[in-house]
Length: 431
Ligand SMILES: Nc1ncnc2c1ncn2[C@@H]1O[C@H](COP(=O)(O)OP(=O)(O)OP(=O)(O)O)[C@@H](O)[C@H]1O
Ligand code: SF4
Ligand SMILES: [Mg+2]
Image (cartoon, rainbow, N blue to C red; front, top):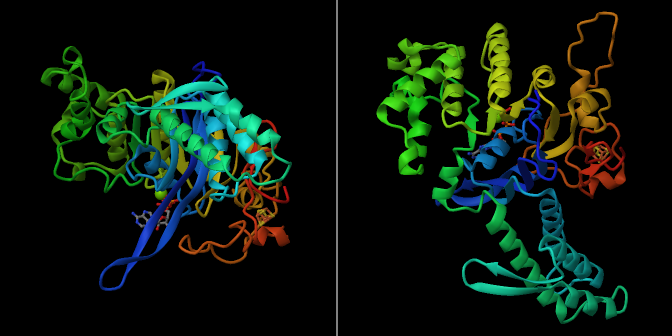
């Protein structure tokens, strides 16, 4: 739930742009790659500071992989994760990448070159400016020159010479934006340092805690890691670590007696609390909560969810809340993203999504939520067939094999996520 933190209007806390994660499938004696599981396939969304963004979808649709990729626990195959980057930069960058990726080498239409020049000009604040790539290279972004060249070409005629310049320019601009803002292209030491700002609570409280470690060491582990990067005056002493560990355990409803026990001596709910205390230990701004209550009894679930809401209020946290349970999502989240087979098919504010679902898959998901009022009957939409394999997803719209509204184009063309107003994004040719 939103914590009333005043977010900066010109930037989101997290922007995920064209994120992909393909896991190789290995076969044969030599364990060669014989294909790939397209677990996450071109996912773009954002999370505002202070909010809870829900990520919902059936088992295996890629929710955990999205969360792990943002944290760099599973490095993405491609795509970009931005932290606190001006929206204008992210929007232009995302469009620039799309333009470059959808243009074949040596086959760039003048209109595309012009759009590329405009995007670069907007991002670097000038039509003709110099940027530094890395430490040594310098490059002149002469967007105005490109504009003149392409506007003098006959409409629709392909560029023959300048397209290489435009492509080089675009690639340098992309490289520079990545260097300035992207989390996932940073060096390992920088990523570790970033874990002070971003933390993860794992899906399974039974396997996520090291059975050989004492609780005091499990909770303190991220603080010890961050100590290495802290300036000497700001490092926690042994005593400081101990006090902070006790404080964190108390904050999640445990106490000092629990410090010298091993994980197997705790119930599932208590283990999940230990996971939350551990995530909080480094004062993060953002926490990925991966099904934090799905392995727990309903009564314990409610306690943990309320505690997470309270912690969010107290510490101004931002959450990505992953779940396959729409009732929990409705209780916890401000906005919701719906995933199907590696793609986000719809996202909107919670109220908008639950009141006016647009994507046929979202409609089907919402239609099976139990309604407490027996007089209020809702037609359940039962989708035909099974979820296809992410190793061999359907062409065009991935949902076309099960969609009640499918039309011809759905078999061939993958629909783009488009804003239908009021920050309600949908990927569908019909809706
Ligand atoms: N390390 C891995 N190696 C190979 N395939 C993987 C790996 N991790 C996940 N996958 C595959 O990627 C797909 C997405 O998995 P993921 O765990 O992200 O789904 P999920 O939506 O979190 O599912 P659940 O709701 O069951 O937790 C699945 O098909 C899964 O089998
Ligand atoms: S694009 Fe076509 S197949 Fe996909 S959800 Fe929309 S109508 Fe259904
Ligand atoms: Mg999962």
